[in-house]
Length: 125
Image (tube, rainbow, N blue to C red):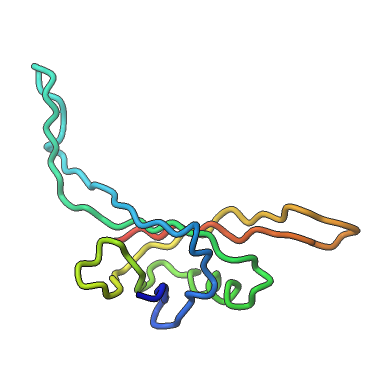
């Protein structure tokens, strides 16, 4: 299966560093979670939500810059490659996007010679 990453229907696969792409899960607990008097842990699991983390390719890649602009919303629809997909198809969902960590690592005479992309975190809503 080819690597899939699209936001609101637009393909941004080329903007993502595939070696930094991870799909994990966050457990959302209810108010009935806690520890009992005998030390047992009671967990009131309401949901398991997908959390995607990735780094864009360097921002001189125009597609990466377009991706940053596409993520400048409260919520986005994302289709993505997932190792948890049963049928080998891309998974999809609605996510809260966060873009952080722009880094320029090497300068020479006020020119960026090498830069890293932005860090992206997408949390399923």
